[in-house]
Length: 376
Image (tube, rainbow, N blue to C red; front, side, top):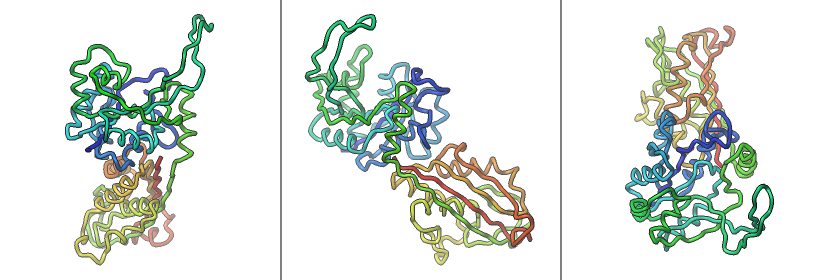
């Protein structure tokens, strides 16, 4: 099976309150949608991921695309969004459809749905209803409802992709969920084990619940980097991916971008994976004059491959010259693009050493950086 995940994130979620739809609000270090996507990125059974966004949110698309995620625009109804996602996942045999507002989904829930698809056309997690059920009117109990055989539906809901797409082609009206569409087409849906922690954020109080759940299993790593490069002959320096005119250059085996080198080492440090020299030995002639973005992209991909999301980068350049301030914005944008995160999560700043030491004498540039990785 070639199993893909389809994250539906085109809703507006107004009941949750806040300045933006709930999927874009933060729970701890990450936004709700980032927690959700990370769960599927970290699962070995998921080959590809697509995200369906509202038309007003398509400015978020480049960030997801940089992480290898397919993005498409949704429609007026949820069913329109699901159909759009099914179409772009044309290479998948099976698809797991998940609400972006369920950030606490566990690997076990995803695994159980995938396993059930080996013998069923569709499968979805559900929780047996254990509480007494009432009917009511005007805030008064009018009766009771038998809870036998009742389940609370969750996502991801898994399907044979072609079968579900055909089911949508013949379905009329608005469905409660994708299981309803599948059943209307005669598909048998297996029920897999749900998880009480697999909550859907609906109201403002659910953000605190989700944070408490995620923090129980969240792996947060912080790495530090430090690097120094001396000045030599040249007419420019490369700093954080930006070419800055200068009366000197920086000396190094690669392009000597001290900023990118330091951020790269910070990410490797968070992963406990050595440093640039471990992965790109200076004794290897193929890296002579190499552009430093190669190193940074490798570190960022390595973090993703291990199930981590890079949530923040802070870089401090230490020098008397050149002046960093006029170029800081471009540096932030360059780093954000290389590592695939929002520019708001990248800090690049500069300081001097008050004319003390080698940086104060204008002999070179030093740099310090911190990177934070999160696995949920």
